Image (tube, rainbow, N blue to C red; front, side, top):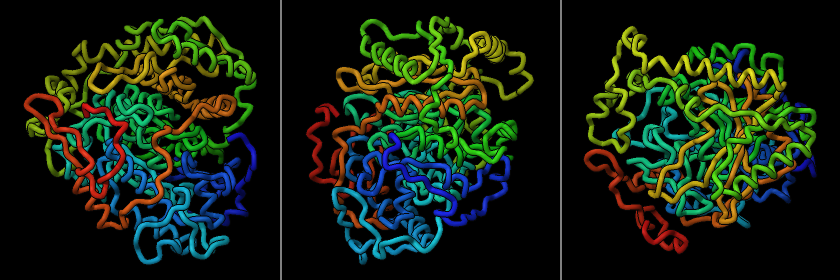
Length: 613
């Protein structure tokens, strides 16, 4: 968005918005909803909005103008999931309550259902867009919150109390937690709609998003390639427009790897900024949920909803007074087109791809030129920490203790050992920490366990010295050294992306273009703890001058489907999805789903799918 046809939403235009927030979203974590609604501008007009890559702001303003209902928008995205899911395998289950929630939001806003779908039957989507609501004109009610009616695709390791949370494993296929994760409650209370749970690497252990329950997630830009992981279902789904907003989780790159692979913006926040309560763990000292979106603006909007203190996650107590909300502001205040003017950006020039990935290096070089042309001072020649320096600081493996704590709220299993003994796991990695002691005092004397914490301190000192000596606002480097590999043909690790989590610093990735064969490439900006406002300012300004986001060509508009969406239809869709079983040891043995394995998908064109899948 370049500021053309700019429409700024003010508090007067949006009405006096009130929102009852539960205590966990108190003054330290919540932002005044009227401020959020007033703080964004620059959306496309109704005539320009085609819903491919429509932003949350654009959809919300469409609601305010009375152009369509939340129910119609949810049906639009359900049609896209239904049409394209056989190719991508990005979704584990659709939320059967999504349409009911949409109807509640429509009632709050005072709008009627679409005239094209008054009594059932598939809506008639002109050019693939949701139809206008029956009444037309301005709605009579109020927006519930900043995410009013916005569908959100949530990684399936984030607890939802009204649908299963599986972490991608068959062993937990029917596991419904007693309570939703804090971030799910935040999304709901802001008016967002959890439309579906996304496929992922089983237990978030890997970078290819392969699970015993959902199979392998494929890349919408090249269906022979992986979508990255472990939040690959969210990445592929947002990349292919299954929803405007996505939630991933990041331990060592799991928000940023699939964001790079799917031409998205992905933020790994400061660990203490966003609650991890109700999220199945990998390494709790490094795990953090983060937004995955098509624009920096939407990433900032979602961060405004998620950031703040949660008493159920003691680590977030450090966020008190550390966010823009403490001074009555918000992260979206930092979306400044001139945000690079006067900034000092360090560059890890030696963190470059091999010679056989020259196009990635060229794209990164062009991005650095864009940064300089936008008014920033580029500080090159910084010596990056060695790969071994970074990897040695990767924190000790205490997964079994974290999982035992998590399973206290899950009825099916008492602890990780019992879960591992189920014989239904695709991932062996999650069980490796069972060899370690449960005794904290013993672990404190285990050098192999505690050494990474000392290495982390040394690494923080090394990078912090560079930041201070060069007066840097951020450090830039290529996000990926190579393109996502073909599924089953090699691994794809995070490379540079380990630096942010081992430092406990935030970072944001965003697109810089495509290789000659069409694979997305991105870069990363790293900032100091609590520097998300500066990162959003830098990333937004870069996004405006570079404009590198392009939706995948093979996943265009869907002009309705043969499904009459309601809760029963969604339940039937979920029941008929394919399940991938496991073999003795580790490894997915299920054969990839065919069109017939999805309800109503007979006749879908799969001519572009690889023959061996």
